[in-house]
Image: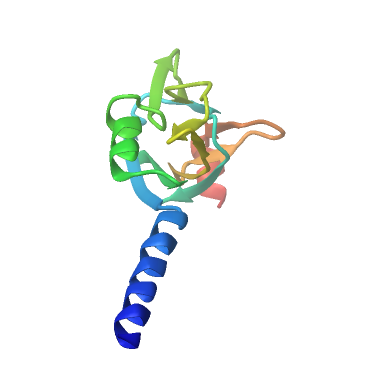
Length: 149
């Protein structure tokens, strides 16, 4: 009888602990943008981002997203239908702007509680682009600048 009580108590505690512990949902998204006729790249992203040069011939953007106290269904909705973390591009006069699809985001709610989210964005620019001083713009290096390196 004592073993049964102990087992039931342990099971009850386990179920309680599972309902108290918040779910952590994680996903990674990526986009690729061509730079054929692009002289300058500007950024207007909602989330903090890091830019690295790479040997590729396109721009690649990755977003690593973690949402706490949410379900997979909530995450799927915000990725596929709401496009909460979508990255888009606009090309005008040789200037490519990498932009967040949603410029403002209300907090995610689940079961009446706010879901905490962490978004890390990393941008990979072809190595023939360099950062313009004191700005979030990157410009294509001139041929003579590339040959001096």
